[in-house]
Each structure stands twice: as C-alpha cells, then as structure tokens.
Amino acid sequence: MSLRHAVLGLLSESPASGYDLMKLFNASLANVWPATQSQVYGELGKLTSAGLAEVSAHGPRGRKEYAITDEGLAELRHWLAEVPPSGPHRDDSLLRVFFLGVLTPLEARTFLLGRAQETARLHATYRRIDEEAEWDDDMISVYGRLALEYGLRMTAAQEEWARWAAEQIDSVKAREAGNRARSRLRNGTGTRNGTRNGDDLTPTE
Amino acid sequence: MSLRHAVLGLLSESPASGYDLMKLFNASLANVWPATQSQVYGELGKLTSAGLAEVSAHGPRGRKEYAITDEGLAELRHWLAEVPPSGPHRDDSLLRVFFLGVLTPLEARTFLLGRAQETARLHATYRRIDEEAEWDDDMISVYGRLALEYGLRMTAAQEEWARWAAEQIDSVKAREAGNRARSRLRNGTGTRNGTRNGDDLTPTE
DNA sequence: TGAGGCATGTAACTCGTTACATGATTGT
DNA sequence: ACAATCATGTAACGAGTTACATGCCTCA
Image 1 (tube, each protein chain N blue to C red):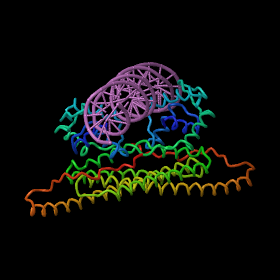
Image 2 (image 1 turned 45 degrees about the vertical axis):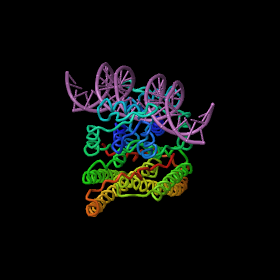
Image 3 (image 1 turned 90 degrees about the horizontal axis):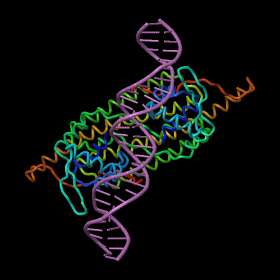
Image 4 (image 1 turned 180 degrees about the vertical axis):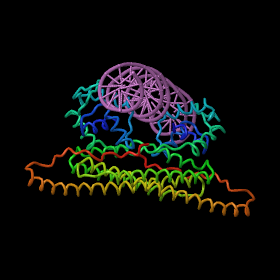
C-alpha cells in the first residue's frame, strides 16, 4: 500500500490540498507512482482518520490544506528505512517476449524494434529534462537527480537489449533456414520437434 | 487486461488445466506476470465464455483441460503485434528514492546499498538459471533466453545505479559539510533554505 | 458575463490478494 | 490407512480506473 506513502512523501515537503497533490503526482511521480484524483482524495481522508495527516488550513472554494503530522512523518521514515521494497512486478512488454513465438520471426523482430524506438524516445525526454533543470544542492534536487539518472540508465539498457534481441532473431532465422535445408536432405519433412525445455526464469521467491 | 493474454499465451504452447497453469505461472512467469489461483480459474471461465478457449478434455478429480481456440490464437496474435504495450508503472523502490531526503544521508546511503545488494542477488540467480538451462533452437528457448537476458541486463544496470547513487550521497555530504562551514562564517546559522526546484521527472505522456 | 481553472467528492466497475472450503486419487 | 498431491472453486477485501456530479472564484 504505497499510495499512502507517496502522499505522505509529498506532504512531507510541504502542506498541500488534494488538488495540489494531483498536480504533484502528474508533474513528478507520473512515471513512478501514478494516482488518480479519486484515489488521492480518498487517501487524504484515510490519512486524516489514521492521524498521519491533518487539515492545516481552509481556503476559498472549500479548499482544505493538509499537513503531515509527527506520526505521519514517523510512518514515512519507517517505511523508507525499515520496510523492504517489493521486487519488480508485471512488465507488459516483457510478458509479450515470452509469447513472441506465436508470431512470425519478422513480426517478432518488428515488435522488438518498436520497443527499441519507444525506449529511445523516453530516454530522449529524460535527457531533455535533465538538461533543462537547474540542479541545486538541496535534498529534492539531489534525490530527484538520482531518480532521473535511474530512468536514463534503464531506458538506455532497454533500448540496447531490444536491438540486441532483434539481431538474435535474425541469426536464429538464418540458422533455421540452414537446419531446414539439411533436414530436407535427411527426412523429407520440415523441422517440428516437440522438445520442451528452457522457458523457466524463476528464482523461487 | 494482460492476465488474459498471459493465460492465452501459455495455452498456445499446449493445452492445460487451471492447476497446470498455476504451475506454469509460478515456474516461468512469476517475475513477469504473477497470478493467483483464483485469478487463473476465474480467467479460464471468462475465456471459455468469450470463446477464446474451450474445455478440450476431462480427467480424474474433475480435471478440466483447456485448449486455446482459433479465435483465442487470433486475439493473442493481435495483442502481440498490434496493441501498443503500456510503459513501466509503479516502482516501489524508485518511489522511495524521491523521499530519501526525509532520512539522514547515512540512512539513505544504507537504503541504496541495500538495493544494490538485492539486485546483485537477483542477478546471480538469473545467471545461475542461464548456465544451468540447455538452450535449444526452438521458439521457447529462443524467446525465453531473450527474456532472461533482459533480466540480466536490468539487474546489472540497477546494481550499478544503486552503487553510483550511494556515492553521490557521499559527495553531497562532503559538499554540504563545506557549505555549513562557510555558512557559519557568514550567518551564524546552519543551512536551511526553502528553495524549491527540480523534483519533476515527467515526459507529459 | 462567461470561460477557465480551482476544488471536492461519489458510484460503479475491474483487477489482484488472501483465506477458506472441499473433495478425489495415488503411492507408500 | 494416511499423507501428499491433484484439482476446483467461492467470499471478502483492498487497490486502481473511469465517469459523473457539483459548485466557487477570478480575470478578461
């Protein structure tokens, strides 16, 4: 349940209304922990009931400004320092890779090159942000920079992987063409063996 | 809604019961698209109603073996080749990085080194799998290998990043110590400026 | 005076998690 | 006979998404 901690984290920087928080989510956490308006308002309510945040001011248009409480800050620190983060989960693109065998090699190759392009696009956007931002020495700048660098490195590695993977398909296509030719000489039928193997990729968590 | 496609993908390799599918999920997709038993049984029901899968055989203990239909295979191909994959979403560890400022630099550094260790552990597990598997030229081996290589590259990059990030904190700590010293000479008080900046990291999707 | 932005909330739905419940078969 | 494994399902809950509903300010 990390939406809670995302909200607490933002509130730890400064008090904010639900509306403000939505802007912050869209501006700074969109790629890391997206949230919808109804989630944010709901969470603010729960946070208040739990004593982790409180209404610190009332404004125009029914605006309610929330501030983190001492208890909330303690919870945030506890989460950061003592709760083990959960590993990576659910990668749509990678899931597809497992089943690329149902496509033709050409289609599979196209898919992978599409991935390469998409990650390259993302990488470029991150680089632009990096160049345009003025990085200070304050905490937000330091840690924001760290997160951005993570994005830069991951997108770079993903693009490289996707290009490499596309090449692998080419070389397998070539090898298979060879096998088919040799196979015809021996059997008269094409390659079609039912050997099962590999496929697993699990560190038994 | 990719659970559907994960199930279709597994069924495309061979018919299976819900029980079999659970084993496959745990064995080969645990790190990519985990699923629970109740989800799998539920999805098999929906898939059957939708005509994308069908019960192909009945066994002992009420076993029902499901097979993918032509329509299901078409849907799988369509998803693979034509539906654009959604970008990366919700990274617990990275979310924490944004808020590391509420911890002491030492605690933050400890967190990052912990991440480095954890990704290194995962990397080692993947490498072991890679070495122990016998990779053939069949589709499952080829694409399984691709996915594994992805895991290897990502964990490697993550570990490098985490170590780099930990170092950054050290160098900022040093710089800050300097600033504090200089600051004392000028003001008499410690550093405490409210400048907001950076923090954003969003390619306006 | 009207458009655009500020501001909060609810309802209905899907997806995912945990726990419970039950029973049949197989091998020792 | 009894333990392990095969095998299927349901219920309750929490998290996330989409759409709707409403109204107040401010500035041009």
